Length: 211
Length: 128
Image (cartoon, rainbow over all chains, first blue to last red; front, top):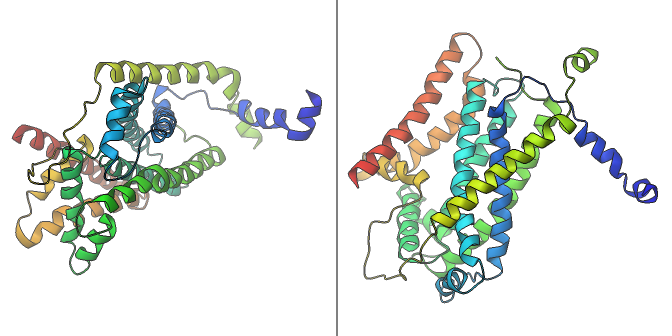
């Protein structure tokens, strides 16, 4: 053990995490952000499992979701968990936001962490929006059609904006690949980066005192 | 620094670990129960000839409702201006609240930003 510890410094790392001092006047309201993070981890785990069978192509997407739901062992459960933890993720981010606001914990010196939090909320909603298209069914198609057309109302650049989001004039195979990339790679990577900053700042600044 | 050590005696381990583990399992329990009870069904395959009014995720309902209030050219207010302004206002909270009376101002803005989507969501549900 000591040979391993000498090389990887594991016990030092554990001491830093395990012996981290925590003020004793915090209640269960302080769990809300951690619960949101728990659902994020579940989303990542179930999402990665879904990528084993999901095919992001115009011809295959619907069939692959059908396969996950009907043929793959426990596929229906993984898909159900992914869908429900997405909703719970948003709910707990909102509750966490309320708690932080009520405690006035966004005040100096925590301005930056509040802004990062708002960005995380926006990214999470973006992830929900892009993920909604992936089952490639009626509901998904028309919700994306309506949702992306909203970008077209911007003066002057609206038309280009819609084409950029859709990858073409209409919602189609290009849109599906684009949304898959955003949902499975781009947005999660951004969320992980922002979460790291979010937690790092909390550790450096400590938990805000009660009012 | 010395002062800080005196007022904080509890550490993550062992004081909080058990509670954190319980909360994590609580989250998993709720999720698994809901996921097994309400399994998402397969939707119908895409039919381009039959357009229908889709229902977005619950956290986007307010945006769909908001758009109705801005007909014609002003639709951009509902689709872009209001949502973008809401996010920016929310981000600006620490700078709006500079203590004293501005703190009350920040609270009013925050709770308005909270009430607006809630009312719009209720309005959407009632009208569908």
